[in-house]
Image 1 (tube, helix red, strand yellow):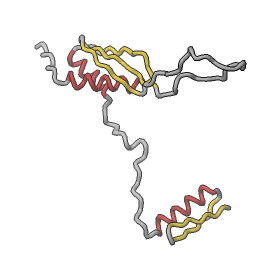
Image 2 (cartoon, helix red, strand yellow; image 1 turned 90 degrees about the horizontal axis):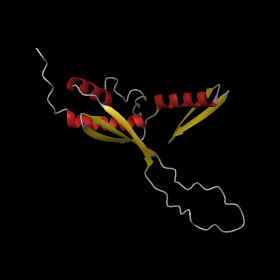
Image 3 (cartoon, helix red, strand yellow; image 1 turned 180 degrees about the horizontal axis):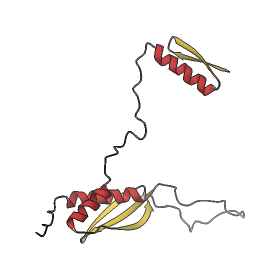
Image 4 (cartoon, one colour; image 1 turned 45 degrees about the horizontal axis):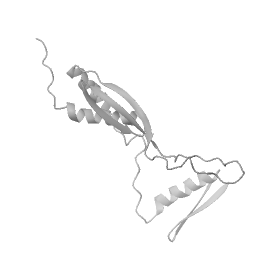
Length: 155
């Protein structure tokens, strides 16, 4: 059995549990019930922050393209890092020892790029993932294409 004492300012709570974590949680629960301090606001769970009804830009663009009778074509471009290496490969290396392992390129986040073509128009998207780059390109295309009139339906 584990015993934990929790102190907030001049207030003290003690609780027991079969594990340290359970004892900590029990002490925290007692403190939340009996403290004179204001209660913390409840955090939204990770899934609550996203609206389940929200539609991604790519889905919205696909729907608009179907109405316009156009086909979006995504073309991935080579990902690149934001920083180029300043390592000089022609530097003379001193000493008779073999060179130590050296990674000449800085490890930076890769930025993915996508080119989106719709009816002769190109839109470029960038993002930390391929999906984010597609969403970025689709969002740019949506801004441009939303103002185009829909083709009239044959009667």
